[in-house]
Image 1 (cartoon, rainbow, N blue to C red):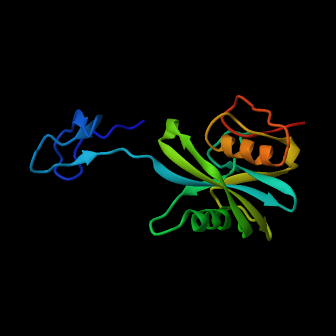
Image 2 (cartoon, rainbow, N blue to C red; image 1 turned 60 degrees about the vertical axis):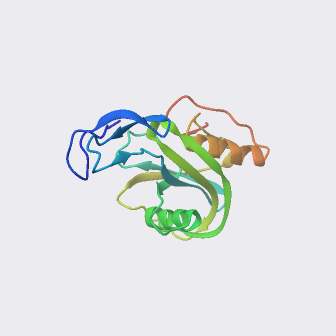
Image 3 (tube, rainbow, N blue to C red; image 1 turned 90 degrees about the horizontal axis):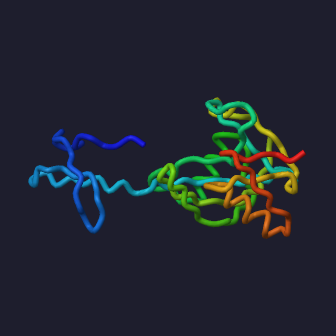
Amino acid sequence: MNELIFCPRCASALDSRDVAGRIRRACPDAACGFVHWDNPLPVVAGLVEYRGQILLARNAAWTEGMFALITGFLERDETPEDGIRREIKEETNLETDAISLLGVYEFMRKNELIIAYHAVCDGDIQLSEELAEFRLVAPHQVRPWRAGTGHAVAEWLRRRNLPVEYVESARMSIAG
Protein backbone atom coordinates (compact mmCIF):
# COMPACT_ATOMS: atom_id res chain seq x y z
CA MET A 1 0.00 0.00 0.00
CA ASN A 2 1.29 3.47 -0.82
CA GLU A 3 1.70 5.61 2.24
CA LEU A 4 1.27 9.35 1.95
CA ILE A 5 4.64 10.96 2.78
CA PHE A 6 4.16 14.68 2.13
CA CYS A 7 1.32 17.05 2.90
CA PRO A 8 -0.70 17.77 -0.25
CA ARG A 9 -1.42 21.30 1.05
CA CYS A 10 1.96 22.62 2.21
CA ALA A 11 4.47 19.89 1.19
CA SER A 12 5.75 19.32 4.75
CA ALA A 13 6.77 15.76 5.63
CA LEU A 14 3.82 14.11 7.37
CA ASP A 15 4.03 12.64 10.87
CA SER A 16 2.20 9.66 12.28
CA ARG A 17 0.21 10.63 15.35
CA ASP A 18 -3.01 10.01 17.24
CA VAL A 19 -5.91 11.90 15.68
CA ALA A 20 -9.45 11.08 16.78
CA GLY A 21 -8.35 7.86 18.47
CA ARG A 22 -6.32 6.38 15.60
CA ILE A 23 -2.77 6.71 14.34
CA ARG A 24 -3.01 8.80 11.16
CA ARG A 25 -0.66 10.65 8.84
CA ALA A 26 -0.93 14.35 9.65
CA CYS A 27 0.86 17.58 8.87
CA PRO A 28 3.16 18.79 11.66
CA ASP A 29 2.44 22.42 10.67
CA ALA A 30 -0.34 23.46 13.05
CA ALA A 31 -1.37 26.26 10.68
CA CYS A 32 -1.97 23.75 7.88
CA GLY A 33 -3.91 21.15 9.87
CA PHE A 34 -4.07 18.49 7.13
CA VAL A 35 -5.00 14.96 8.28
CA HIS A 36 -4.95 11.99 5.92
CA TRP A 37 -8.05 10.09 7.11
CA ASP A 38 -7.44 7.19 4.71
CA ASN A 39 -11.11 6.22 4.63
CA PRO A 40 -12.17 3.27 2.45
CA LEU A 41 -13.14 3.98 -1.15
CA PRO A 42 -16.68 3.07 -2.21
CA VAL A 43 -16.73 0.47 -4.98
CA VAL A 44 -19.79 -0.87 -6.77
CA ALA A 45 -19.97 -4.46 -7.97
CA GLY A 46 -22.48 -6.15 -10.23
CA LEU A 47 -23.29 -9.82 -10.37
CA VAL A 48 -24.56 -9.62 -13.94
CA GLU A 49 -27.24 -12.12 -14.90
CA TYR A 50 -27.43 -12.31 -18.68
CA ARG A 51 -30.02 -14.56 -20.27
CA GLY A 52 -30.01 -16.93 -17.29
CA GLN A 53 -26.22 -17.10 -16.97
CA ILE A 54 -23.68 -15.17 -14.90
CA LEU A 55 -21.24 -12.92 -16.75
CA LEU A 56 -17.72 -13.01 -15.35
CA ALA A 57 -15.01 -10.85 -16.89
CA ARG A 58 -11.22 -10.80 -16.99
CA ASN A 59 -9.51 -7.47 -16.62
CA ALA A 60 -6.91 -6.88 -19.34
CA ALA A 61 -4.20 -6.53 -16.67
CA TRP A 62 -4.92 -9.93 -15.06
CA THR A 63 -3.41 -13.29 -15.88
CA GLU A 64 -5.46 -15.73 -17.92
CA GLY A 65 -8.05 -17.70 -16.02
CA MET A 66 -8.86 -14.95 -13.49
CA PHE A 67 -12.45 -13.75 -13.71
CA ALA A 68 -14.57 -11.51 -11.51
CA LEU A 69 -17.73 -9.47 -11.29
CA ILE A 70 -18.06 -6.11 -13.00
CA THR A 71 -16.75 -3.49 -10.58
CA GLY A 72 -15.79 0.15 -10.48
CA PHE A 73 -15.42 3.19 -8.27
CA LEU A 74 -18.45 5.21 -7.35
CA GLU A 75 -18.35 8.67 -8.94
CA ARG A 76 -19.10 11.96 -7.22
CA ASP A 77 -22.84 12.83 -7.18
CA GLU A 78 -23.78 9.29 -8.24
CA THR A 79 -25.98 6.84 -6.36
CA PRO A 80 -24.60 3.31 -5.98
CA GLU A 81 -27.41 2.02 -8.24
CA ASP A 82 -26.55 4.54 -10.93
CA GLY A 83 -22.86 3.72 -10.47
CA ILE A 84 -23.24 0.01 -11.15
CA ARG A 85 -25.57 0.66 -14.09
CA ARG A 86 -22.89 2.98 -15.54
CA GLU A 87 -20.05 0.50 -14.93
CA ILE A 88 -21.99 -2.36 -16.54
CA LYS A 89 -22.78 -0.18 -19.57
CA GLU A 90 -19.20 1.13 -19.87
CA GLU A 91 -17.53 -2.26 -19.51
CA THR A 92 -19.98 -4.58 -21.32
CA ASN A 93 -22.38 -2.34 -23.28
CA LEU A 94 -25.31 -4.09 -21.55
CA GLU A 95 -28.47 -2.37 -20.33
CA THR A 96 -29.56 -3.11 -16.78
CA ASP A 97 -33.22 -4.13 -16.72
CA ALA A 98 -33.54 -4.90 -12.99
CA ILE A 99 -31.28 -4.33 -10.01
CA SER A 100 -31.33 -5.43 -6.37
CA LEU A 101 -28.89 -4.95 -3.52
CA LEU A 102 -26.95 -8.05 -2.46
CA GLY A 103 -25.08 -6.40 0.38
CA VAL A 104 -22.20 -4.25 1.50
CA TYR A 105 -18.85 -5.97 2.05
CA GLU A 106 -15.46 -4.97 3.38
CA PHE A 107 -12.34 -5.42 1.31
CA MET A 108 -9.68 -4.32 3.78
CA ARG A 109 -6.74 -5.48 1.68
CA LYS A 110 -7.49 -2.68 -0.80
CA ASN A 111 -9.17 -0.32 1.71
CA GLU A 112 -12.47 -0.53 -0.17
CA LEU A 113 -16.10 -0.85 0.77
CA ILE A 114 -17.97 -2.89 -1.84
CA ILE A 115 -21.65 -2.19 -2.53
CA ALA A 116 -22.79 -5.23 -4.51
CA TYR A 117 -25.87 -5.67 -6.68
CA HIS A 118 -27.55 -8.40 -8.65
CA ALA A 119 -28.21 -6.89 -12.08
CA VAL A 120 -30.37 -8.53 -14.73
CA CYS A 121 -29.05 -7.27 -18.05
CA ASP A 122 -29.62 -7.63 -21.77
CA GLY A 123 -28.24 -6.38 -25.06
CA ASP A 124 -25.21 -7.22 -27.17
CA ILE A 125 -22.02 -7.75 -25.16
CA GLN A 126 -19.19 -5.51 -26.30
CA LEU A 127 -16.25 -5.31 -23.92
CA SER A 128 -14.40 -2.09 -23.18
CA GLU A 129 -10.63 -1.96 -23.59
CA GLU A 130 -10.43 -2.48 -19.81
CA LEU A 131 -11.62 -6.09 -20.19
CA ALA A 132 -9.84 -8.85 -22.11
CA GLU A 133 -12.57 -11.51 -22.18
CA PHE A 134 -15.75 -12.73 -20.54
CA ARG A 135 -17.40 -16.00 -19.73
CA LEU A 136 -21.07 -16.84 -19.37
CA VAL A 137 -21.45 -19.40 -16.61
CA ALA A 138 -24.44 -21.38 -15.36
CA PRO A 139 -25.24 -20.17 -11.83
CA HIS A 140 -24.55 -23.56 -10.22
CA GLN A 141 -21.02 -23.55 -11.72
CA VAL A 142 -19.85 -20.27 -10.17
CA ARG A 143 -17.31 -20.66 -7.34
CA PRO A 144 -16.67 -17.55 -5.23
CA TRP A 145 -13.41 -16.66 -3.53
CA ARG A 146 -13.35 -15.91 0.22
CA ALA A 147 -12.99 -12.12 0.09
CA GLY A 148 -14.36 -8.96 -1.49
CA THR A 149 -16.92 -9.66 -4.21
CA GLY A 150 -16.82 -13.38 -3.40
CA HIS A 151 -19.05 -12.66 -0.39
CA ALA A 152 -21.65 -11.12 -2.70
CA VAL A 153 -21.57 -14.14 -5.01
CA ALA A 154 -21.96 -16.49 -2.05
CA GLU A 155 -24.94 -14.46 -0.82
CA TRP A 156 -26.59 -14.61 -4.25
CA LEU A 157 -26.05 -18.39 -4.45
CA ARG A 158 -27.49 -18.92 -0.95
CA ARG A 159 -30.61 -16.90 -1.82
CA ARG A 160 -31.20 -19.34 -4.69
CA ASN A 161 -30.51 -22.42 -2.57
CA LEU A 162 -27.47 -23.19 -4.71
CA PRO A 163 -24.32 -24.73 -3.19
CA VAL A 164 -21.54 -22.39 -2.12
CA GLU A 165 -18.14 -23.92 -2.83
CA TYR A 166 -15.29 -21.51 -2.27
CA VAL A 167 -12.02 -21.42 -4.19
CA GLU A 168 -8.75 -20.23 -2.68
CA SER A 169 -7.64 -18.02 -5.57
CA ALA A 170 -8.12 -14.27 -5.71
CA ARG A 171 -10.94 -14.36 -8.27
CA MET A 172 -13.99 -16.37 -9.20
CA SER A 173 -13.62 -19.73 -10.81
CA ILE A 174 -15.83 -21.89 -12.93
CA ALA A 175 -16.61 -25.47 -12.01
CA GLY A 176 -16.25 -28.23 -14.52
